[in-house]
Length: 428
Ligand code: KE4
Image (tube, rainbow, N blue to C red; front, side, top):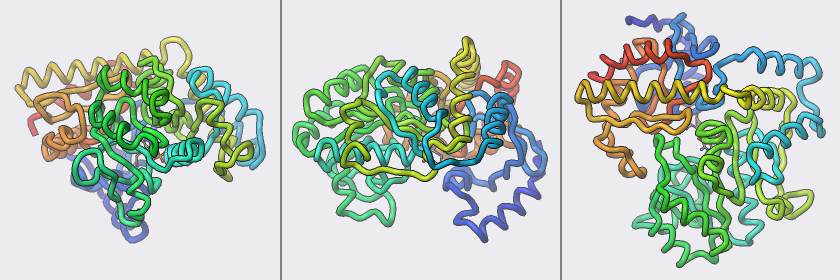
């Protein structure tokens, strides 16, 4: 398909004179896959349409929130109704009580919670809370997991194994980064030896229980089993960052899927239905440290914003209806299985990992279990594959390190159309 791109290219050229890289978030610049990004003009159901009128089956789903499909009519109506009653109050509202009840209903480990305006804010606040509650400065994250752009979380492994971290971004003070320890995902021995050595200084372990920011990787049973002992054994809180996995790997998230009770949980994306919402929460005893009850400060002008809360509440309401999540998961399973058949037929070195409505195609011999293995995948081939799919009208997240998102609006027709294009794109 020779795709018209004049309008998007002109907009990109203008955007580059106004915003770094021409975008408001780096991955949108398509630098990992090459070419200029289409500028999106509208979205509905399983489709997005760009400024040149090209229509795509969308598997980015605005990086997760669009689990019902774009512009779901009930969500749009709920936001419009809320807007008629005022855009923002900066005061408590009934909708915030309803939202907290809805979240606790699906995530019983979240006994008390606080709404914020992004996944970054949720994770940043949860880390500060863990440090304030335990009185310890150290935090543990896993290589390749992303928890937003708070300073303490933009850290990569220091030299050697589970040593203290070094900044993964300019502007992060080394004095701060050294409190962040990084271990390979699924590395039980590495985590255990770090906790044995530093446990009394470690406030929390934060992880994506199913990763999405280095592609979809499952935790091993042994890894989950050990994590379940950490809080009790070391007094180090376990934080499930479910900003991406929440409502995605299951309606009840990874903690529902694995029957795991984290001390704290972070939510984002789906919980706002596409508008800016983050949530952090967990054990009431821990949350009691949050101001105005306790000494840990956290605040936000637009926390619990009525429009964002209305979008999130309606999204959760629709998603909780019988069969809605199953439809999205079914489409994801059909797509994953269809790709596996093509990979076998064409003799391509690739694997597909899927959990619930999230999935990733890795150009590798075997499914990666950690970041180092993901880094060894053929990302150049992913770039060629991505461009061929885009030209064929299929919009994938523009990086081999991301998860694809399938919605309840994706039907067999979209899956079949995707597989038809993939048959040739896999040979790129
Ligand atoms: P936000 O601040 O972008 O709402 O959430 C940060 C965040 C926290 N935790 C997890 C597990 C996340 O995946 C994210 C954000 N995800 C990326 C996609 N990999 C958002 C896309 C972007 O950065 O443009």
